[in-house]
Image 1: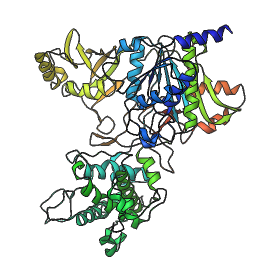
Image 2 (image 1 turned 45 degrees about the horizontal axis):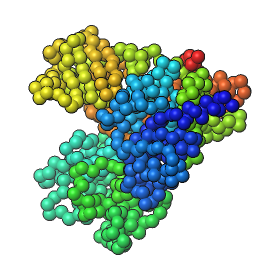
Image 3 (image 1 turned 135 degrees about the vertical axis):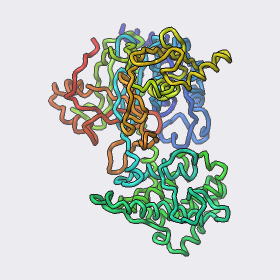
Image 4 (image 1 turned 135 degrees about the horizontal axis):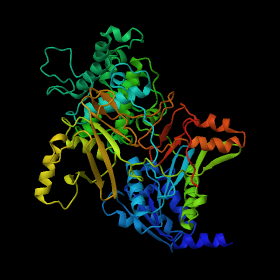
Length: 637
């Protein structure tokens, strides 16, 4: 009874911060309110979308477009009117949510959808010395982990696996999987036609028409009507470009040759002329849709080559007719129906050329958007586990903290697998301040490159300060004097060896982010040359445990690509990663005593024996564990 009373008192006195009001967040807010918590603060930047309604049960159709944090508050106050819920429709990285803000809370509960925000919250919790409970779900899998400064590892203590990436030559010349066709359609063709045309793009833009004065065939001629333009683009990317690729016979010695597809092959001339003639008048009142125009209603139907061709032509035409003002600034969005239709059709036509089975729009959208469909029940289970761990934290019962993993299939009648937390990693640059090592050419690399590619991108600092010895060479943020800002701007364009305090081999630099109250040291090692394919940044950071960006590499350039699964490719990865090396070793220890390890191993090693991560489109992640035979780690004592 004493323990129960202690729990009740801890809950009533607690001031809790929730970050994220999506799939987990809705369930968590409800569970906190019904568990007796009376002072809850919620931060969420997002607004409610129609796709949220199948699992975020605090929201209704009438709420679409409104703030998630505010609507969630209003919904819960209807059945718990006497508690205090404070919503913030804002980004958790805003400067007002600083260390002092975090210090007012007894515990922070995360339900976020991206690595960058998770790392930011982790650092603020460390600086404020406030316990953090992390969580994630994808499909039937889920996890809850506890991070308390000095007692358990922080969120960034462990290295993350490298997400799947695809060589640009595979994407542009030799696709073998449907996901390769999706990447081509989304990141190359869609971007070339509707995005910023000044950006580098690996599509072949040269025409075989020597009489043309234009060098870029994607430019529309002044006297060219839309159907003509659409057909010319179709013939170029699916016909001429394939014929050009076939000219390199060496490429096809050990590969099946693709077949060029021209519009005359896919559609009879009369069908091309009347394309879209069955346009539904309702399409004029709603967002433009090639499917509606063509009378295609089932997103789970696999279209024929003719249907894909019609959708391609119609979608391209609708972009220019209905959304011309957006062309030049468009970025693919999985919630943009017309964009998904165009990418699906283009990917399927390309797949037909290379003998790859076509996919339905529903399947293609999942691949293009890195979608692993959420399960509301998993969110509810994980929310309950978050509250259980939060109560332990509030009671100071650190010996009973658990990282809990929700499994898809029972193992010895257990779906929930608790594991003791790990100790802090002594080599973690975030919570142990271990120096990092940066190999870089100090004679050719500018300070701007180091800040953009390493300090901001890899280390996740928002407003960095850079010191070389006692010399401040760069500072970012508000409040700088004009002459200071101008001086730092000049330093950005200088190579490292020519800074006011030269950075050369064996120089030690200090970088700091006052907002995150994070400080770390970087030891510089000069290196003359780097492999453009393997080391495209032109520098290598060692001792860093963050994830590698998903990218296509081409001539030293980086291109974002999805790393998602197709129907026959269980390699789903996403931008957020929380794999714990050695985690399955602990599960192994638990299950060995039950003589039932095989059941877990069979269900968790999906697609690979190496660490893999998947994430849904909403808020959450989960790990698929790595080899249990790898090195052991100490349990928290």
